[in-house]
Image (cartoon, rainbow, N blue to C red):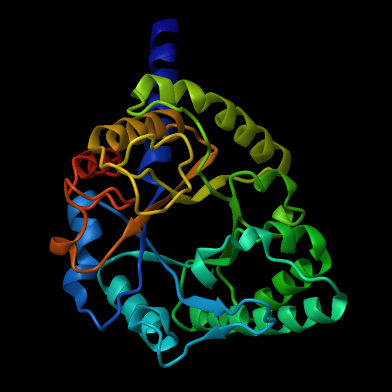
Amino acid sequence: MKNSLLLCLVTLCSCSALFSQYSKIKGVSFVGPPKKIDSTEISLPKRIINSNYLSLMPYGFIPEGSTELKYNSEWQWWGEKTKGTAAMIQLAKKQGYKIMLKPHIWKRRGAFTGHHTYTNSDEWEAFEKSYSKYILDFAALAEKEKVALFCIGTEWGEFVQERPKYWLQLIADIKKIYSGKLTYAANWDEYKKVPFWKELDYIGVDAYFPLVGNQTPTATQVRYALLTPLNELRIISNSNNMPILFTEFGYRSIDFTASRPWESGREGAANLQGQLNAYEAFFNTFWNQDFIEGGFIWKWFADHKAVGGENNNGFTPQNKPVEKMIRQWYSF
């Protein structure tokens, strides 16, 4: 009788762990293409790595010193504009994906949005008016297209800290027009300070934690370094009674990939093994944790055959050995 009970408990635990993996968000961040695409390119993340979610990112832009966002402009890429985003959502849903709509802001020369700030309340209020229009327009699109998940912002460290009342009002305004789940994409060094997690459904984290300074870090080295973020993420998940969602995660195929994983410059030697080892450690550390909802790999491009490859030192896993590893983890 005791043996039967023990077997039952083990079976239930095993099934629970398997269900936890099977139900995870296994996403990719699909870059809006410059021109119209068909279902073929949209289908590839599912066919190649078993992805079940796409993050689509309609970009807005803010000129230096300005308080006004520019978006849905004629000069933008097709997949960044409203019409292209809507078309991609429709194509993706026909392929069986769920969608996270994640509006992004691009600053001149790729300056970090986390440092964006103003010197007086008039400037802040002008910027907030512009940002609200941008976000609410895409929240309305998310509702119209029955998008599963909407991200209200990405890596706005100073903005979140200096204007918390604005963010609470923005969330309330979004909920008036959008009925799906909500998250915010906090930078790896910001998520502990975000004051409005309890108003959302997921604690969103862009998981570029600085880890190991080796040219080609081993999976063991990276996994050991990830134990600190793992424990800290568990604490904030428990304190908010809310799962963690990696709104972005990934490693470049470059030397020293786990040292400063957020860096995206084009300099540096390609290193496919370093990328492979870092991904192995990431999945082994996080993917079996019940409080981790899953995440979105940074990043995936259309025109798959022409992207990535053994000489590419960028983030994309396309046409690199790491594709096979991701497929294995995304197959659960």
